[in-house]
Length: 361
Figure 1 (cartoon, rainbow, N blue to C red):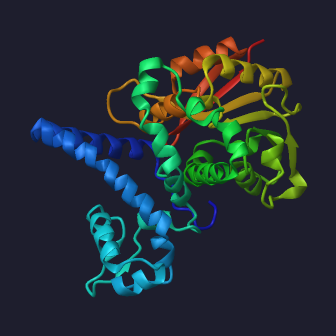
Figure 2 (cartoon, helix red, strand yellow):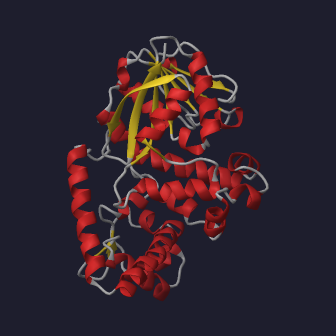
């Protein structure tokens, strides 16, 4: 396990805790008057925005060196003490941060995930999804539902990736947010699947290469090829181990590097409509040998009616992109149309699953 990463609980334990949590929440909603249950759900939007404010102000980073009293913390952040107390009062009531007996604020297991240098950090994820840019898109959710068409391109004048390439402040914030997601999912993925059994692993649309780099660090015999758009790979941070990592650029709709034993597509397929996803997968299929496999890492939508992260993100796809989240059967059909046979779906302790497929003869 990578130093500093928390231990990964077994997926069955995660599912059991989730069932208990969802059951208690459902019981609560049924016992209180309906209008109160609905009001409580509405107010969760305030909580999300409050966590974003804490991330923007850098509260967690200011507490890394130790607890601080309200006045001291306010001075360190350059904010109004009364305003800070009011924000922290709400966050403390949801166990985000801790307040000691002397009144000072301190980090806890939850708020450490807002620290910039935490092994698992969600700071930039909150900054992106709580940004004015992103909030403005979500105010048009009803329009997206009416038309079945994403509103992002109409609002931005281009699809998101083209807009992000042109407006680098948004693009860089999004890249950091996605890196935050990677820190959240890396350990569960590595605990659930042996990526090191492949001689050469091609990370298609791999971004900054966080997952691929971690795989190579733990698998001394594996070589990696990181593949993404030219404007992405030209801004890469220092990667390692460089003696086993090659960087290539291009569009995965045109061609991807050949010769891989496995092709990794993490959070890629869900960005695209069925037609575009099939085109992408066929491009990957064309580069693969008969014994190679494709590993699609995405959320697999469950058939149950309980809350699930994929149901939220599916609406994110509806609002901002042309993509969607898919059930296991929808993935099976998509892969089949693209020239693959789905062999298995491996669940993890994170919301993601790993879909392992091979070329259909």
